[in-house]
Length: 575
Image (cartoon, rainbow, N blue to C red; front, side):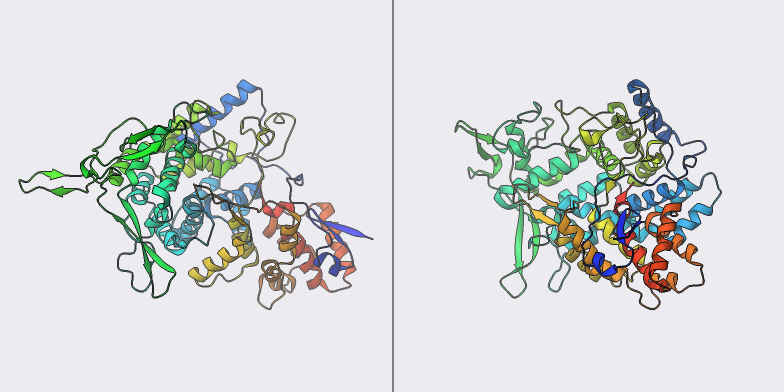
């Protein structure tokens, strides 16, 4: 059987039905990307001091370890990469071409400023709302105690306003009100969704996720015993942290039926498990059966009032009580771990690997690979009032972010995928997140998103097929979006791909296929849109053979090429 190669998908030249039915399967692993001409690093010119600091620290490690960094990424690769990472989708054909034809030496910085500015404010907010929705409440859509739309609305508003990260954390930890915006709701506050589904069993999930997400500490296993590897986290610290949440209740509200319609998050007096609100203690059990008592004490040893009463006024003008969650928020945002945890998380977002593995497990047992860089960026972020956009800008304009993902003789030892510490001597290719793939398919095909709320529901339905809920005490979930054969077949034959490859009048593919361009230019347009590069000589030759095989049906042949590109390794990789 004669075959041709489009991208990295092998197709029969004349039997379209065979591969449309999923007989031939593309490999979704980290394949070899096609060679291309390398260009100058996008961050030419004099970098800002924060960017220079990143470059100096990374280059020092290269020198110490004898690594030679990869060549610079092509302009198209870098442009595609920064669109994916900053706003969650690939660039449109016009956006890519506008960048490629610009000759300004500071064009990379100007593009980043635009992506972080007013021109893309809505897309930036939507993307980071998606990212943080997953971080804060996971992808499980079946939890009735969480309202995903309410969470997204709060996050979109927060990222659109670019509120400082420390204020963002404080709002999440202290939120009260109703978690859904619907009929009968009087005090909607989407931030309540972070805790509304984590208060069962004495707020075990709230305790674990607060430490993990905002402080980079995995304390979940210390419910029952001291941390087996991190000598700095003891069992008593878990329960002392847990005591901060004991005034918090999630009141279930029913909208006329038996199903929970929304949750109202409130603070109430806590009498303690011993019944004395002035000494509102909780009890926990050691592995040997001994029962111990815990009061609210932060992980650094800072104690607050043991009272379980909320603040109030005495007849003589004095005051009593304490709001434990507000005290916790104050201690969290004042902790030196807060800026380090968010720096580590964002670095991992942009590079695929953080300075620790996992990114949310600081301690003597898990030393950072670049401690000076981690500490320095944390300090600079604080100096910039926790402005996350500034941190993002420094990272994406740095030298390591501008490198090619190709493995070359000088950077072969830099192999974190094999368990080695990441040295960032090349850009590590990684599969798009499922949300990024969804948005990129819509972008590549210029599909109409329609109403934002309905678009979000459609995306959730599409993503739900990948979600696994583990049912642990921490409410963990994960996606199985890992390139298995059933998923490949789903992408090959799913409704999203069918919509993306239709020749509907006025659609993207129709405009390319039936436009005034020559066939070669049409093929170039498809490659640029999907992969941010032009086809190689071999790929162009193969595509022309497909055009010949279709015997003059140019639109249908281009439809085949387009389908193959959208299902290729290279399309679903951020590289």
